Every structure is written in structure tokens, then in C-alpha cells.
Length: 361
Ligand code: XIL
Image (tube, rainbow, N blue to C red; front, top):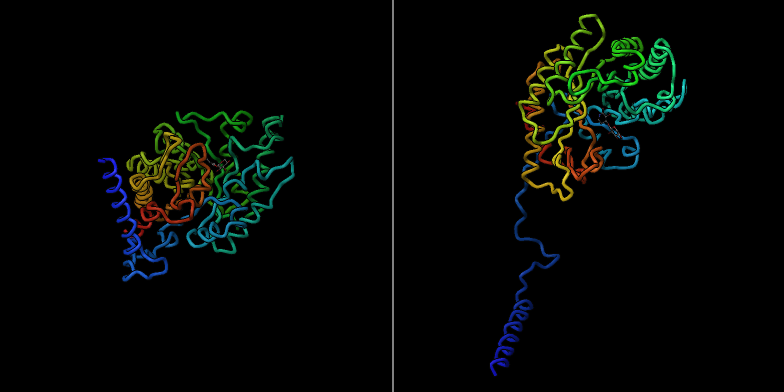
């Protein structure tokens, strides 16, 4: 009897709930207009183009050609582009005297059409070297000739159209010793000076950079780079700038960022934050989620970077280049991450405001 009464009660409760749903829908009719429009969010009209220094990004030709939203962000926000891979030796040099120019030509033309600066990356590096060069066996003089021919060919082709070059990339280990690259092994440390001289011969107006990572975390590397640049300049070698790659993570302190920028500026040269991204998942967790808290921490890193750059003399401030346009195309693929100021749907992230918020200061 008790069971029957319970079942009866239960069916009444559920009937009542069903009736309520029919009579008074607690949801809005699909096409009904809300009584009041949501309050309009204040729209920021400041873009990266309003920055007191040039902002740019690394680009990939096929994405510019085939992805409308990617191209829109580049055109609306960027004042400078760096070919992410198209100007590397492995992409350009297909054999002694044989070159593939299509991608690089496309990007240089694209930049001219959209009034953007092109930063050339990179002439002499320890990696992305074509097979014919790694297999090359020659005397020191022949290696110098090979390097000279390559630099003359590439820099000469884009004379007046590529404003600046990373002439030598990553020549040092983190402890400040020379990296034993193929160039170092075959030519000796003088390869660095020679590379700058050859680039200058090919385009006397180009701004020439030494580019590397790690100045923000290794005092030894910072010291080695600054000593090299100052020594070369004292000898009259045309080194005009230091590029700090800045592949950092959101735990890097603002004071580390500032110290590295200041050290580069103290060499009396142009300072370029040349490949910036801020990893949010350096622990490489497989279940990483980009939370609001993480977004704020990442924003603080971008903001600190811009403030550091703005604290050096304006006539040394070459700009900031992000290593990619939006998160989905970042080179950081070994774990889920969200390192750039635009998310994978090309929407601005808090990092964007972290940068633009410093512009008027
Ligand atoms: C990276 C590119 O982003 C990748 O697409 C490519 O596969 C490898 O090189 N430091 C540099 C850049 O100087 O050239 C590197 O770019 C990232 C690290």
C-alpha cells in the first residue's frame, strides 16, 4: 500500500513538472528579441599598427595565400613581416649556384604591396643547411667563398627591398662558448665577422643583426653576445643590431626581460625582439587548458616585454616580431599551448591588450 501511494505521489510530481514546462516555458523563444540589448562592450580602437615601434610576425606564404582570416590579421595589425622559413638556406639553396626563390619572392612582393617592412631571417645558422653544404668538403678558403657567394646572392637579390637581416643566428651555447657549427668548424670564429662584411657588401643600406635566444636566462650568453657585438663594432664591422628571439614562457620574470633588453641596448645598437612567443604550458601537460588565470599571466609577459622595449632609447627600438600569427599556426607543437596574442580563431587574447595598453604610456 505504501508503495502504491509513493508511486502515485511520484507520478503527480513529475506530471506537475511537465505541465509547468508546457505552460510557462523557462526558456526564451528562439526568435524572440531580448527586451534590452546587452550593454555594448567598449571597443578598443588601438591596433598593433599604433605601436610606438614596429610590430610584425613570422609568416608562411601558403597561409597568406589560402587563409583569408590569417591574411586579414597580418594586413590589419602588422607593420613588418619575417619569412618564418622561406629565407633559410635549406629553403633557398638547392645546389651550388641553384636557388629556389618563389616563396621568398612572394613574401617580399606581398610586403611591398601592403607597405610592410621585411626582416630577413636568416643567412648563417647551424641548422636548416642543405645536404650539398653538409656534404661539402673544401679548404677554409673554399668555405669562405661558398659563404660569400651565398650571402651575396641572397642579400643582393633583395637589395633595397629587405630592410634588415639576421646575418648570424645562434652562434653561442648557453654557457657563452661558441657553438661548434659547420661554419665554425670550417672557417673558425671569424665566420661571424666575414658574414657581416659580405652582407654589407651586398646591401650597404641593410640593417644587420646578430640574433639569438637565451639572453633573458643566461648571463654568460648575454655577456658573450654583447662582447662579440661591441668588439666587432670597435673593429668597424657592420653589426647594427641584436635580435633577441624571446621564445619565453609565462613564468619568466619581468626583470629578466628588462635586463636582457637593457644589455642589448647598452651595446649602442638596434634592439629587435625577433621571434617572441610566450608558452603557457612549458611543463608540456597533455591536458592543458588555457584558463583566464593563464591568459592574465601571459598578458603580463607581453606587457612587460613592451614596457622593457619602451624603456630604451626610441632610436634603438627596432620592434617586436611574434613567431607566428595565431596559436594554431605556432611552431610550438610538442604539447598543447597558446603562445601568441591571437587565438586559434584569430580572436584577440588578453595578451593583445597587454601590448596595446603600453602604447600611450
Ligand atoms: C622554426 C620554424 O618556426 C619552424 O617552422 C621550422 O620547422 C624550424 O624553425 N629559432 C629560429 C627560428 O631562429 O628560425 C626557428 O623557426 C625557431 C627557433
